[in-house]
Image 1: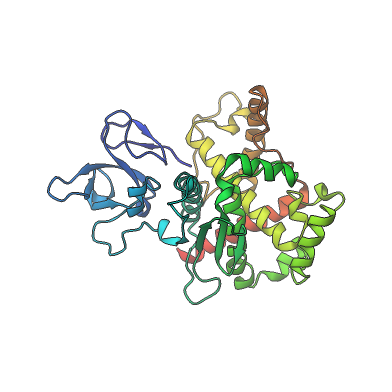
Image 2: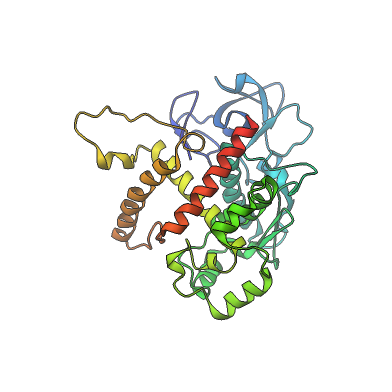
Length: 351
């Protein structure tokens, strides 16, 4: 995730900000330019703003969900749809009359916005029209089963409760469980239909992940009853990935998105992992690439590994669990590279 600068005072602003903490101007995320922009209220038209020195100075308004304090994305002042392109993907939101639902929805939207941001950076479509998988849809509700079915990602609102989420993490013996992790994993199922089944990549998928035609529900029942495969660490990025080839793909997809955004964030913040191998006389700063579009897989992983080692050490020094509590075996590297190549190929086809 990039950091951004206020176009009024040049102060640093972040993806979730609604105002610049230095000059006080309202700010919001402008998806067409993939940037946070600083706004000047239009005195003659309440609710409308002009972007200061950005977005062509176009008239914009906040997404209507900003009224609930759960969104800082912008829409065109002339758009008929008052929802931003991320909130427009919601089919179901929590019942706001129930205690705690607004806070849960805010946490869910915060995670979902980061997912959608990454999909836009990758140039991955969220709607394929009549071609499967169709449109990406989100259901956020109580007493629903977290998962994916036919393009719909469902998340139980209780996952936004930190205590309940930790209870489930311990119950399932997971090293990591977050809302963003759920969303990235479930999005992987959506993009499997598009990038694997829909692009004639099924043979290569089966070579790497196994035959997905085995019974999915029997495989999950077996996993929950008997646990992960023996010696799963030798081939999979996580224990759950060993349950079924579809889950292996979704876990690998989620980890690839973890890796890409974390390295992008570290790069933006000046935490340059390549500096660990700096040779005196090298040109500084290093040339920067768009990590979502240009960075090779090998270079991406060369940057990721020293970053995780450093961050894990820092987390331990603060008494926390590891920042990245996983070890990636060689077969999982191949699977991650497969995901990398499919995403890059999709971007090339769209541009």
